[in-house]
Image 1 (tube, rainbow, N blue to C red):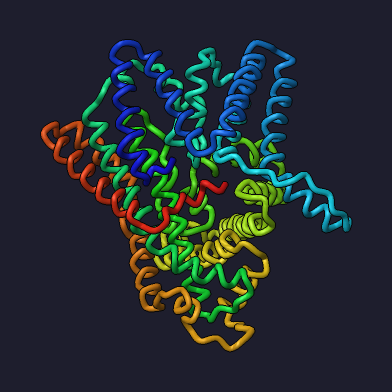
Image 2: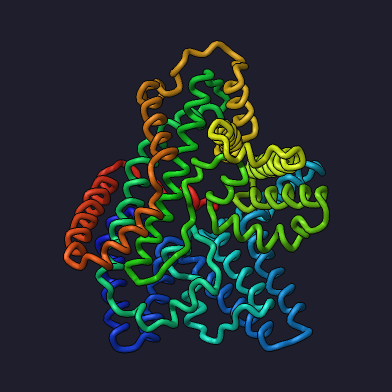
Length: 491
């Protein structure tokens, strides 16, 4: 069920909200159980055949977590078993065909296991539960309430596309009786942020998407773009991806505020970053934090010398790329970012030894140059992320580098799709300016939460305006010939 669908907005959400607060007035435990059931229905509405897999994963991880918390020495064995179980399921459903196809290509064989369908959201709920097991082993958490644990994993605003949650972020909220009582201030601010996220997705991301698809689709099929088409196609996807995923994250945060629940912010204007390290502190923050805490640091982080640090950075980013999908293009995307981070850390180490770093940090010119170089690197890497074939990615990069293999009329790919190059340029300029200069929704949301708390009379007006805006956007989305899912649903 999509957040942008009429079924969700006009039926599912009102019923779930009404039931949650109705039960909350009587018994918070009943409200938590209601929200758990609603979240399972939300998941099963889309892929009912995998609901049992989700429930089995929750039950198995809860059981292992109990064993880890109850045992001393054997806890490590339970942790290893739990992580192996989670990664085994993820490997089978997400990577089995990928590895088998590559093995067949290497050995000249024709082994097959049939088509393995990827359960939606499995990457997110697997990482969420791995983090829970590790935190339990480290003594940070001890969960004894199966309903709360199940809700922590299945909570519908984050279940399909994140953010990746930590047990400690959610359980204190589920245990707070005030969460189960309606709060007009939270509801109004939540509706406003939900509407902002909906606008990002329905108007901005879906609006620019055709200009990216019209280039990448034919190029994957063998077409050769002009330089202008390649650059604007890559920029269009760069902006589509940002407004699509940040829009989802805003909607998840807004929905959660309606339920008096806080989700962590997942974006902090990443296209305003002035270095690749800064970019990864701002982009998909929950995944970056997971990779740092549960992969980079256990590998040794920066504690075992500079060479090992760079190896750990590269390995972490390659595995982060592979997490996104079973495709060599994702591996190369991760490897590129690993290389970027190695260069970035090496440059900072060199300028630090030379005594230049303070001056560079204070220089406006250096910041602008750093931003331009970062965005260039990010856009180039997104080509691998978007292209469905390595050959298509290579044709895009050749054209972006000025090497057009055949004579191509500029704009022909858009013309073939019934689009116009000038409109593509206007979309890129407008959305690029918004991403680079406008304040992000985190700050807007924080302001609105405070404003609605301080201005009770303004809550109804804000909620009414946001509701009207959301209804208009949902109706607009419904009238389209096709409704697009969020990009990160694929991961």
